[in-house]
Amino acid sequence: MGRRRIGLVDFIVYFLAFFITIPAIASVIVYIISLKIFHSTKRAVHTSVNWTTLLYIIAVNLLIQNLFHMSTTGFILLFMLIVLTLTILYQWRNHMDIEFKKAFRILWRISFLLFMFSYVCLVITGIIMQIIG
View 1 (cartoon, rainbow, N blue to C red):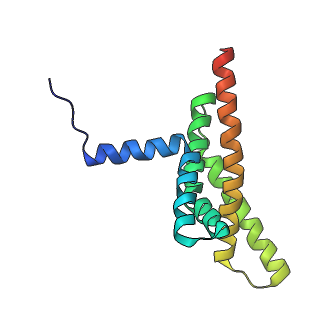
View 2: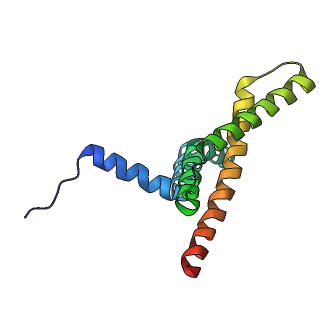
View 3: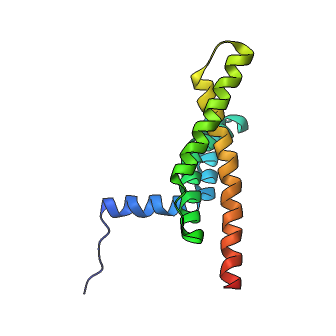
């Protein structure tokens, strides 16, 4: 019996699954690559946040499904819509000019912070649940 060859599609699936499972590694890798390219810590951090936020959102959604057996996709989308709406309302009331690009950027950065924190909390919760149960 020969070894099974991994096709390109399988490789891409495993690659994405790995980074969705552990998005912190993707954040560090993107940060290091960005730092080498841009030579600016601030720009490297922003690039890392922009490129890995979606991984954290997916990871949190999957962790909640795994740990608590409930789907949160709708809640996550609703939360993001509410944050975007509040950001746009804030811009409208204080500046009278709405910058959608800026509003989406703020949403994305808030999402990164919230979902990264949620990811860490859920991983710790999962470890504790495995030890106890």
